[in-house]
Length: 191
Image (tube, rainbow, N blue to C red; front, side, top):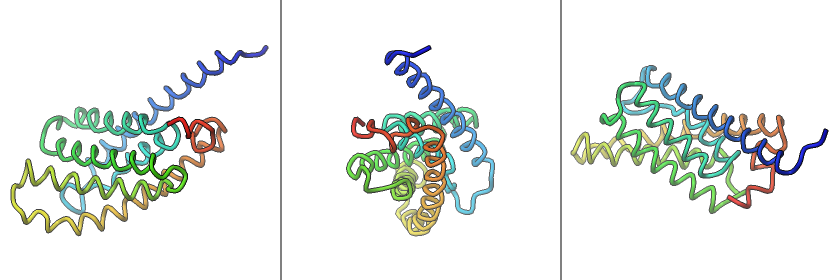
C-alpha cells in the first residue's frame, strides 16, 4: 500500500500538532513544578520550561515557540491560581521580551546561532522584562535596578544550561526522524 503526497502532508500536520501539544503540556508541567521549588533570588527561576519553547523554535519555527511560551505562561499561572497577579505580570513581561528577542535572533541569524546562544539572549531578555515590569507595577523605586547585575549573572548561567538541554533534546528528535526538526529539513527557509 502506498500513500499519496496529500496523505503524507496530513500525517505531518497531525504529527506536528501532537508534538506541539506535548511541548505545551510538558512546559506547563515544568513551569508549575518550578514555581513550587524554593528560589535562590526573589522572582528568579531557572526557566526549565524554556527548553521546550526552544525546541519548538528549532523544530517548528517562530510561531510554535510563541504558542508554547504564551500557553505556558497563561495555563501555568491559571493552574497555580496566580492569573493576573503581580507574579503573572512579571512572567508575562519577561516572557514577551524573551520570546521576541529569541524570534528576532533566530530569523536574523538563521543557521549562525544555535540553541545555546538563543537561550542566553532569551534569558537576558526575560530578566530585563521582569525588572521593567517590577519597576512599573510592583516596586516603583529606582533601587530595583541594583538587582539587575545579579539577575543577569543568574540568567546567563540558566540560559546556557537550558540551551544545552534544548540542544540535546533537538538532537534526540533529529535522530528519531529526519523530518521532525526544521534544523534538518528544507522548511527552515520557509519560516
